[in-house]
Amino acid sequence: MNQELVAMVEYLEQEKSIDKAILFDLIEDAMASVYMKELGEDAEVKVSINRKNGDVAITANLIVSEEVVDKRCEILLEEAREAYPECELYDEVRWELQQEQMSRIAAQNTRQAIMQRLRTYEKERVVEEYSDQVGEL
Image (cartoon, rainbow, N blue to C red; front, side):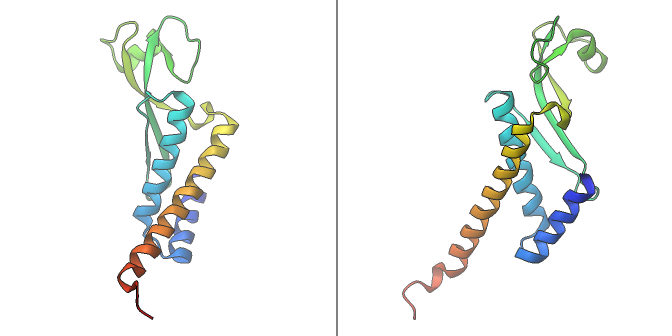
């Protein structure tokens, strides 16, 4: 998906005349909002996309626990201590999530969120472009 993402962004840049940086920001924002809904509203999710190769890094705060009930928002103590040796039970740790951990519905919602943000951006751009010409014929 990584190279496909970069190719899609480059295509949209040429087709819709939208800067690549703005497109990547739109995609990161949309993905983060969907992952937040998936993990819970208080889940401080951050999505970053490598602009060159399209690698997606998703990080979220996970709760350290003895037994993982929900792998989307919890992590085993032993696993967390590999990266954070000083962590204790019920601490929150910043952890990189795998895209495969998210549900199929989350993937569909991500696509819809990206498309919605793109449409909103295009509408705002058109309004901004023609707002100084209101009242002229």
